[in-house]
Length: 221
Image 1 (tube, helix red, strand yellow):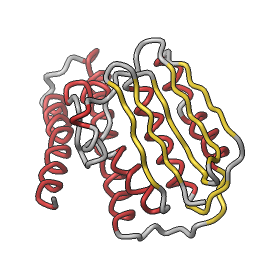
Image 2 (spheres, helix red, strand yellow):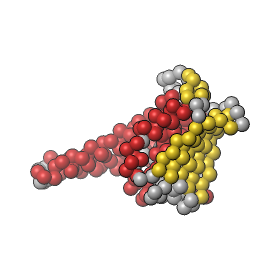
Image 3 (cartoon, rainbow, N blue to C red):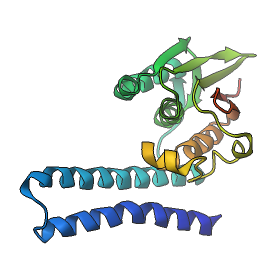
């Protein structure tokens, strides 16, 4: 697993670095027309952003793996976190044309707010990106059977049955071409899995191809 992870990280780092190196070399040699400089600079900026996101996600995973989060657990209202996530995603939601619903009630758990936020954000971001035109995402927060839960349901493309057991693995992508097109580091769902485990929560996934996916995180009562 360590060798595979190292290989994947090397590949994910090499791709944007190669692009940055190639573009900057062309600009350095004066081959780029003045009117094209802004576009090339934007490409460098975007690729650098990919690298920063990847490194940040690797750091988060490492901290979760080693139980070395530099913050103490406290009472966190999942509904407030969900509202904050919806606000962070407002521009993504607007661009996607997907309807986004937040449904729930104040639900408090012992946890680390930034990690819980990242967990919910990653699920919602995926639900939007892998949705269909005029699709729907429902983010629910509440309690059932005395246990707090968060669920994210979408009407998207779904996950093939044979891939469902692997989607939470690091860098695993069901459709590599589609994933490359929409971006992302390939670590989002892995962070969700490790963040749930860090909080002693259970993770459940239900998905039907071309119908949608539901991911639910159930915390201890």
